[in-house]
Length: 387
Image 1 (spheres, one colour):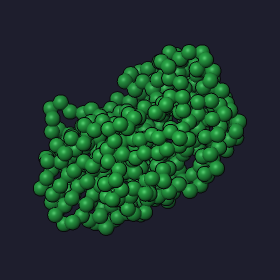
Image 2 (tube, rainbow, N blue to C red):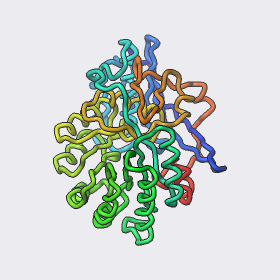
Image 3 (cartoon, rainbow, N blue to C red):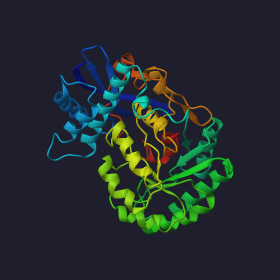
Image 4 (cartoon, helix red, strand yellow):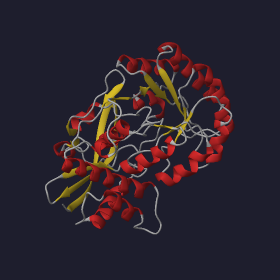
């Protein structure tokens, strides 16, 4: 079998809530072979430039055997002397995911069977508790609890700067207090910071939030300085999560020996793809660190992560994927959340493909708002964006 085409497919999805329309862009990857087997992946990272990189990298592996996934990953990773960065790694990840889809389809098995086989039959997931006020945060939390979710994550911060002002700090604490009182102690609550606090502020606020029993404290400081993260970890009693902006095993090799993290969150469409995340998870397992794939993007970010979740020993919980449009935009049995869990994808391959009719009527939108965590199209309506 030979690769005959590697193509980036940009697309957009729009949602209207409370009279506000928001659009987000995505980049999917389609790989075709001379035996009629097609694989799909995702390379979403924000800019459209990743699509050009997918097409450029695709030319490197045209005519090659799609089954030689590790070989192609190494070839693409070392293709440029100046390597790495979010655009290059997202392009490699999208291609790699599509190659696993082809391999599974060719062999007639789900991708997780090629990675050691499943070790669980259901995959824990979570919703959101964000809101611009305590009342809206509670409303969002209860909406998700009513959908059967038993864990929720929220970013309660206004993000006016790395050194938080007193009013914003008090508001963040008030939000979490209100949500904890509303959902009770049987729902796990996660606190997301998006790396936007200085270490001293992250420590002080983390200690104030401790009484509300956060399950983890995510990316409390910017990701570039791992020693700053360790300072926070050494001075709070809440488990620390990070890793959504770290790329490849090489970044995690710097993080894990610091003993500064309890849960890692690599992104399958940015950190190197399925096998690279499997390697990263194995590294973390040796440090007794949990694994939770980052997942705020499109359907193939979710489906690839679910295959990893099914077969990874130190998997803990899965982010995202609770979007009805994922079922609308794909062909196949896309898992849906039920009572706080996803089922294991059935396969073969990834088990789903993009609906090309959907793609044809949802092209890339040049006017789509560039996504920023915790803000959305209107910073005053964070509750709408996150929910």
